[in-house]
Image 1 (cartoon, rainbow, N blue to C red):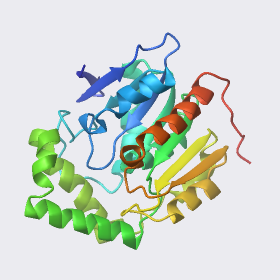
Image 2 (image 1 turned 180 degrees about the vertical axis):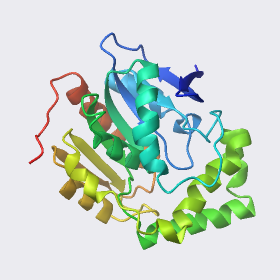
Image 3 (image 1 turned 90 degrees about the vertical axis):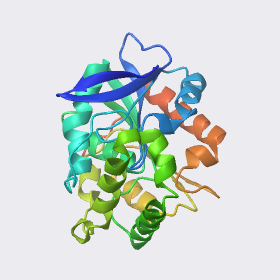
Image 4 (image 1 turned 30 degrees about the vertical axis):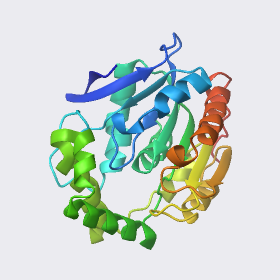
Length: 268
């Protein structure tokens, strides 16, 4: 059931699947740049059932039924979500220990959060699905194609079903930022060595927004234990293309790192 929380004065929609634990441990889903709570569809419920752990998801401001935001978004919007908003969300939800599962923009947010000193004790593991740590030509081409689809109405109509009055904010806040030439040098690789929590880095082999170079960069950069998985035949959303395999891998990772002592490597 969807409800709302207050994150430092901003009203955000959220939902739980499974019963919240007394120790505050949970899997936290962070949606993609055009996503929202509802666009995870059946995945959160299935992940809660598969893992036996509670799953929490929310829509960031400007998405779904959450409060709108002014445009344009700042170039720092992913950093702002990770460092300024996510801590308030976790506190409001009573989540003391989390495995973050982030898709695309949500994956980048998860990495930035895991590199934050303020959240290190709360983040027990990070799963990225099609995350970016830098901008590639394939990324820009994919974002340009999405823009044309939105202007034709092919993309706007289905997005309006999920975002309602926020549809233009959701689209342009993401699309305009990634197509801004000034955003072309966006890069978070320098943050990766600060990540000591275990990571599971996933990407579809047919991802239209990024190449396997993203996976390689994350794996080479993080300080903590890391697993990588290039999902053959999957696109930008392997959790939709290969659902059962993704559920099994993510559930196993979350069980290992939420129900056991954290595996951390001290940064050198």
